[in-house]
Image (cartoon, rainbow over all chains, first blue to last red; front, side):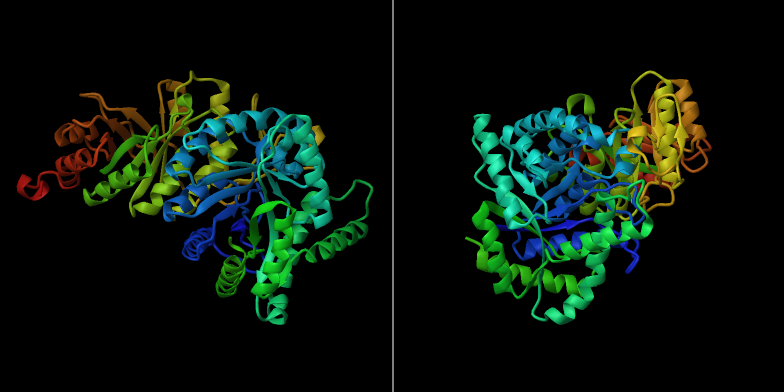
Length: 318
Length: 252
């Protein structure tokens, strides 16, 4: 099993705002630490036009990280493909993949926030159709790039997995899916691949929220506001208020979604975390991208967690 | 006067080559190292490559990019992030190879507005930002680029053949770039930025000083190898910055 770090969004969060120059300097430092500790890769996230400055240009950051490191893989997790022109993504990835000496990977997915699609003049409801057209073209250009750029498809549903299966592309599974949902999705993937006569990839990638700590109580108190911020943001984007819904009813729905998803966090010492990650490996995931940065944690706390994760890596590495 | 080396074509270039050229540009006293994408050949990533080069050199990094081929907000976002990762050392040359059109005009207007930090609402013939499409409702009436670039204003030059595009670029506060021709002057400054001349590797200091006249100039000099960078730096850096100093000082 390979372990990656991420995803990173370089957000200037209200609970701990920072200048973006510092936040990007920090992620470059985190990448250097990840490389020194022997992690497989670091992964970057994308959203647009958000008040906290969520990173909107992953390949540009990937360029900077590849320039700062020598061995570490750098990936997008995920680029919201239907909002981009596919020729631009292909041209950017081919160049940066070459300059990065084969260390760039692309993860792409649909995206879901109306305001982002709207900024680029794309109808959100067209995203599936757009993906159907764009994904085969991107897959072809990633395959023919020199060196090739590994391409993953970010998924949270069986339909999205089936689209990837027909092209034989590996999945990058969402952090909020539980083992039963993952199993079902992989079944749907394998069935669709078989029906299309495509050989499925050996394994897939998975994202998890993970925090390695020897002092659960102390760190949980520190993490809770960060996790709540992150989940409220993603929750608000995924489940906007319905036209006929009152504000209190909406907030209640959002809060229950947040509280349910907080339980996804894998937290504990290295041995405990390693045991949990092995369960996911057994399902068919050979790359697990672990997110320990939820908002903008104090640097020391984040680095302690990353160092802890490197002990997990020592336990789970082949 | 400012002096840049390049732009280095990204096609078939390796990181090692970019870095060795960049190191020589630093050693040879250039203000900036430039590189160039070529989307017509499928070679993109100019701004991401500048972000990469920015990690290898302490001087400014320039990206020559093809303008008008995709949504201006994607370009604005790439510029902002590349500028932030290089801690405010990014420069950009927008190459406009297409004929002047209302689309190109709108593209430049939206790009300038986005990079300014304005909360945009733009209603053009081709571009509507935000699009406010019925299918996407409800969405905000305006949007802003976030994060913004690190520099208060990223220096951006426009190279275009069409007079109307040059006029608009000037109006929007972009610098003007042109290819060096013997006897022609540096394009006029646009308030913030001196005019830029893209020069061959064989230019001499006196013809560049003559082209600038009483104005400042930004000269980006072609150089494909570290030796060419060194030679151009030795020939130009001293005389352009300290004209009239004796050669035994300026060409050391």
